[in-house]
Image (tube, rainbow, N blue to C red; front, side, top):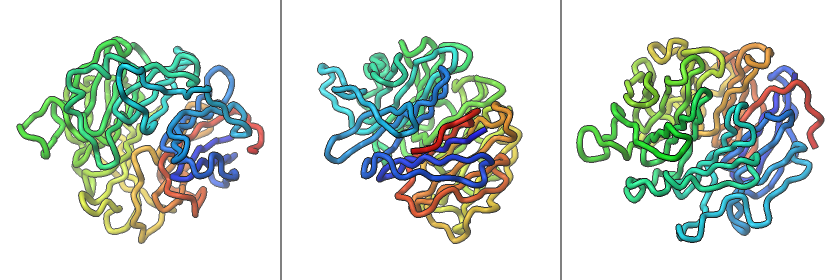
Length: 370
């Protein structure tokens, strides 16, 4: 089996492959000088499609796709994502690309700036605005996080028509009908920067992940807060005890092991660096009740952040290739991989531009990279 790792940076995309998730081959850059804030590997329908949210200072933002590992790229004549004219809005950046489940082939979700969610039914070639979220009465009060005002997490349920969306800054919203209606779901999440003890929305959530064993169990890394929900987001409980900081950007859930979750703590607010300059992932195997730090192979004296989509897990456990792989990319342009569920890491690449996103998939066979 071959692991494919897509690395999106401030100035282009790199693809890396490995047979053992320890030794890696890294491609020449693709889409050089294009910012790549979002990437997805869609392995449904018997092919490997690389979907990339790009942003060029000259051409603007769009979604491009490749079915031959970057040998060629395609884009619709008028762009994959275009706001309907009556909205008066224009696309600023694609923050998230998320293929739906195998049971909904062709469906791909996109989270974008300005805050909006889009749905494609043709594998990411064209997207339609999820109008009900765009028309939500809260939209005028959603704010911009430090990095922008965007929907950065889209989580379709594997068992029903539920979809969760997280945005900065607006909080978590849930649709129970495939996107036709939406409700804020932030009870229990702190928002110390807002008036009132329990605001309905406006929380600064950084990332949300879904547990492998229970689709109703979610994990959220917030601006000062790490939380778990056991009721699909209706209520949230802090699981930050035992972590060196409750601030960070990514949160990852193992696709096969229930209760296993990772976070990458940072010192906040002004510093945003690993505590003590020691980059580490913190793993819980009991749904956030206890945490263990892991960092063998990761650098000490490291004062760069791992951004919200610059960490991911692969599906090796599902594919029968051993334990789940964990991947990190840093603003220093370094990328690391772990083949043992985050216990130890090896370096995949160094000297790249600022890493914005990584995505990995384990495939039965893969042609050589161009």
